[in-house]
Image (cartoon, rainbow, N blue to C red; front, side, top):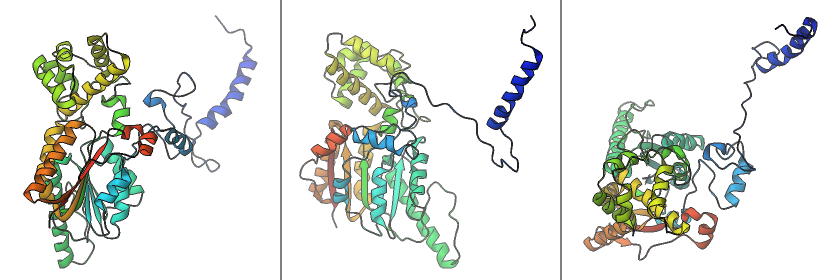
Length: 406
């Protein structure tokens, strides 16, 4: 059926609309050399404030929305996509980084601790930053580069903390190779495209002067539902620090027998209801985090909500540790730590649950008895009441330190 609107009126409407269309999608011209990109609508959400991770576009763009990020921090929360470093002052006091030293951050994460260490290692110092996460490592490296820390002061290494000896060995090998090039040819050399970036002129032994290992999961990983760590949002039940390697939490649950799962829950999270939870969860296929949370709550129908929430977090913790083989990696790190430290070198270990803390405590005490460590922390150091109030995620943190003999 033909339109009842006169042709002249339709032509007029098109003429009035055309300039706006051309303005929105203008091509380059002498008057308009750079075309304006098409407008993108912000994420829509119900209510006054965004709740889901992907809706928090202001928190995810802190450079553009610094005021919003400041308000989130002032409220005692962690902005989406970021991480607040824990016990920074205590760690710096323990490690006492000095200009010209070599330090290692075994768990680079968002780079908060690394930035503070780097500032104190200059001039002439260097930091190795290890992280197994292929998603977050490039982002953190870019942030530190933008902050002014070039290849002469900072090296990013894609590895978990169990790879510390190899990272130090490759760093020392490349440094010797570059010093050899400099002695034979004084012209600036371009670093070989090997796994590690290394500075051109600083001279170090194979050992480090300061080593930090923050064993907590970064907030960027916890808050992002697509990584599978969060008990709040809904996402794939993955939990791998490196999504390109190993089996997911979903695959682990699907093939684990009840007895083995009960042992896992008890060993990795001290879960008191490990047996009954294992019967309900083992050999079942859960594809999303929400499915697993629902199944955990269904297995304990009479439990109070607050206690059930704690159980859910413990189950997720136990699975994450198993999926990433965290205890085995920690044991490897603790075994090799003395050989990775220069005489008089300092190490600080930040743990977040009893399984980690027990391992660190026993290793440090054994090292002191054997004479490997000249001094260890007499007792665990906890965050201040002020830090726990301002950053609730710091509450379970425990800091231990040791100093190598020599």
